[in-house]
Amino acid sequence: MIRRMFDWLFPRCCRVCRAEIPADAVFCAKCFSEIIFIDAPICSRCGKMLPVPLPSEDSQLCPVCSGNDEICFDVSRSLLLYNNFSRRIIFQVKRKADVGVVRDCVRMLAMRYNQIINTADLIIPVPSHWSRNLIRGYNPPSLIARELSKLFDIPTDDWCLKRIRRTEYQGNKTVAERVANVKSAFSCDRRDLMDKRILLVDDVRTTGATLNECSKSLKAAGASLVSCITLASTSIEGERV
Ligand SMILES: [Zn+2]
Ligand SMILES: [Zn+2]
Image (tube, helix red, strand yellow):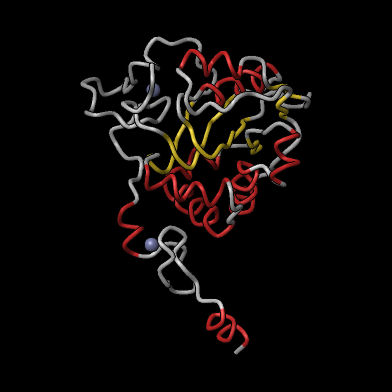
């Protein structure tokens, strides 16, 4: 009765277009149909969508990953293609701390990447600088890490990886500038990561410079495997080189 009254007073609305939706939904059917999920063919390392499948069966690597020994993470996967539409979904996570959206996206991540997530011993969110957390009141990747932790019963640790210097916004930088911007920006305090398999979590992945720099710190601290999961990822064509 109270629930029905609550629903009548505060009708649930689609997080993208504000249309009224059933109580257990987050997006309306129309918006859900517009979401572009990252799907095959993808690069087996960075998980970016490839324009066409590559000829070789065992080496589906994109031009960036092929022969690149600077990459420190073992595998990276994303749920949504980052475009003008999914930007509005990510906005709900980054700016509004909308746990309903996070939970729905995490459920979809679980369906797609169950095997990668399940092999992790510890979930670590990409950290923001403490000054940003203070202003915003939360770290968006931590919201995702917490929901994954609950669903998979894998511990999460917000404190072991730290952003030791405030980096500039990556949005309009080239690949080289992004790499330089996050270089040595992270440090890992935990000494007991030896042979641990880490799931590194972020909201959006573009060039992967941040994920790579975090992975470097985690591997230096002894992690045996670093798998990355993000809610969204830009396309290969969308990268500024
Ligand atoms: Zn909608
Ligand atoms: Zn790749």
